[in-house]
Length: 282
Ligand code: NAD
Image (cartoon, rainbow, N blue to C red; front, side, top):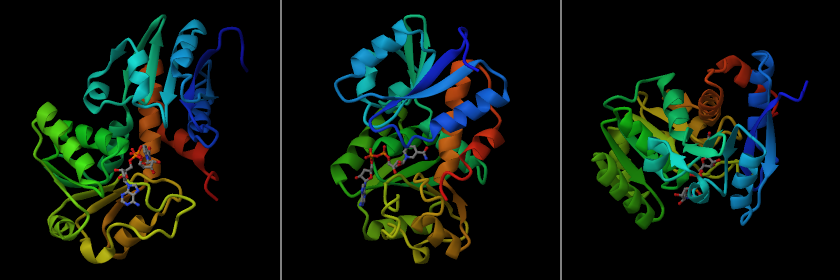
């Protein structure tokens, strides 16, 4: 029940109506008997400054930030956590009175999901795509001890920019390549392949994945960031050659659990987040 003492957290985005975060967080608040509610807020471009100032005025405790605000929101915040600063994007804000601190839990979510099947330490990683998710994951995976990263992207300039940032900020061992023959060569001795492009995402479920089973091997861990559908074309290809697979849903769950912890100091149970999403994709 919402009372006069209920704490409010939420998500801002445009659009926001398809967000899966409200059921996850509200299920955990209920399970843990915490007096919190998680609310979606549709915030259009141009209204971001008002949304952050308004959140402070309304004593909102925390927000998730989704497309298209992850980068632009930074200029309205008072402080950034180290990884949000390195990545250059924020997906979680914690308000403490009039003070707003930005975090990025996407990379942490991805690494935790991968580490359910294999450690990322000393691994050779290939990342498909060079957008927001690629930035978050590449910085986090290097900070967590990956040996090297190859960024394979359609637009060379974006991959090269991410490469320069990783070298400059973390002195990372990183290469950028296109999606052609060089990718085939890199795949033959890679440990982890991560798709951060939206290829295969609903409603384009029949879109051809960037890597087919012939180029994978059974010691490869294949992780997709796309979570709708749960079984993407890339995951199906990986299963054909017995590679280990990590769904995008696990990343979504772990990034949300980390945001919950940042706001409340409590780590919610994984099963509660998982159970709240059952039936969302049928
Ligand atoms: P973005 O737009 O910032 O980056 C997308 C990247 O994919 C770009 O580098 C672009 O060049 C590349 N790309 C797009 N279409 C392509 C195509 N047809 N062929 C080759 N490359 C293509 O997007 P983002 O914020 O990085 O998100 C990417 C995906 O990751 C989305 O599907 C998003 O839903 C998903 N995501 C999932 C989670 C999660 O928790 N599971 C978190 C963040 C993002």
